[in-house]
Length: 259
Ligand code: ADP
Image (cartoon, rainbow, N blue to C red; front, top):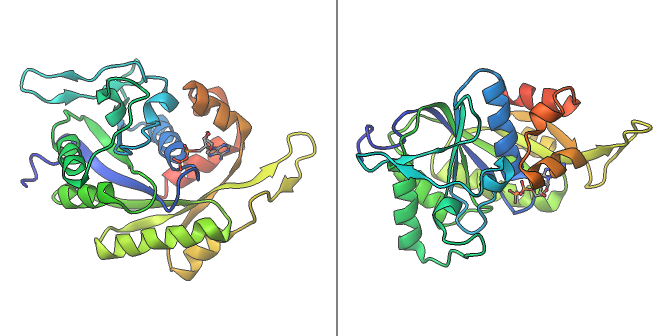
């Protein structure tokens, strides 16, 4: 595949991976995108989580449609009026939000290839949100992404060992497919009581950081459990704008500058 056709219009690509579902991979993708945009970059999100595409909802654009250019390219859905954050998701191509994607490998591969080659991007950074684990979708992304400028992968895990064990498989996948690992992000790492500021380590502590150290990977940072983050994701609101003075906004900024 020629370099002109893969992720045309994209500066750098970052792949977001997690070993299991529910650890906050999509939340991380969305918050890093908002953060990079706040740092002045044009950012796109490509949601290839074919079985659970949640990004449009988190961005509050789930009712939008992807339009097509006269030469048949898909135009990303703009999230903001300044046109600095845009998204393409498989969710936009389903007839109903309740539709399940029950496709065999070749059909998934064809869709992902199309998503990687047929979008008219104009972004500095593209974040690719993948399904949990290592599946057909991941292999399709890696097979079809060659030729693009791929900066690397962010591995998202929660602190407990069960989640860390799964992210170990992601690391093996990255090694086998020669995908550079930018580092490990530990999500849902403790809950800081808003009244007394005491931190409760609800899901154990430090698993992501010790995994990073053991694997000689950069530790990108630790994002605590933040109910407002969850609330914003549920309602499609921009946490970084609404809670700009939250310490979490600074954590994401520090992580984004390490990418
Ligand atoms: P994944 O993409 O790994 O399946 P999601 O990003 O969809 O996970 O997150 C799962 C749920 O956890 C969502 O409801 C999301 O809002 C919530 N969530 C993720 N990270 C946090 C956090 N740091 N604090 C509070 N809720 C979170």
